[in-house]
Image (cartoon, rainbow, N blue to C red; front, side, top):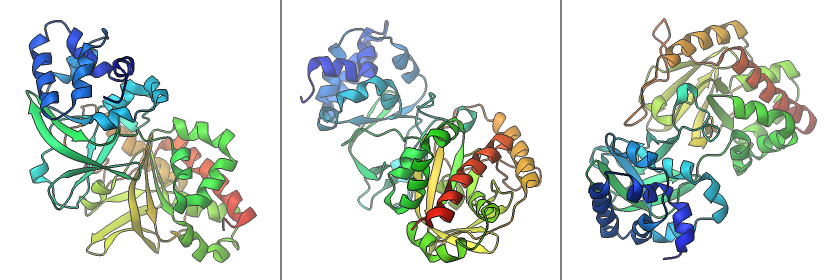
Length: 383
């Protein structure tokens, strides 16, 4: 066992609560046996740790859940400095409902909701919980795509209402927008702009609830850098806002599973999608780009990297505001906890198309981000 007994006790309040929850001795005994049977001896040993509030156990016993349980080596690698956020880390390893591996298509992305919804770790709209991105390999095993790493599962076990997958790493909770952008080497231009404006931009980004960015990679910006350098700041801002959907996180599964998905950008322009054997493509105005890397998660949304700049200079603040009002109304009615894969469109407008936005505050967020990138484009041409 790589962790000391004291560290295990601190690192696993969820497991420790099982011992001390009144009236749950039988449930706990069975769970200990199940953990030991799949080699989770460190996790099982933690059941002897001091008393902690049993609230997590109580919630876990309500309905079916999937638990992605770190193995002994994964727990041994836990940085002690992360213990302050342990409750959130553990919640991010639990989903509502069971993951049916047999029904998953090989090498096809699936997005599911975790049990982590607490602010400020998660700032998604309508109290939505953070998601986990997973897929099934050709050998039938489940792989979690987490922070640019593939986290592999091994043994699959069940205990009463729980489905347990053993994982070889502790999942990292998605960071805030600016941190995630800075960590993407293909977005180094944008990362530099964000870093330069960190004092003013970060508070705005971290308060935003719901953000989807179609972010051109460095080569895409380089291909049009001369053209971008010849337009004024207002036009550049319009171009940027048409890469941004405010007020919601739109994951790749929502795009591929909804052939008529039609979003409204922060610039007020329609944003449409096509999915075929060549890939998934996003169109704004007369510009189309291919999504080359999907589902880069942030605390308040998602980023999709694209291979071209969407050179759409249209600006329609009124349409953006109207779309925001309609979407906010739909979103406010979505109060039930979501189980299963995230595939449904984010919201339905009066005309039947999906229209997204974030109201005046969301438009201001887009404008703030736009001003930062515009400054970098004019001052340094990004590359």
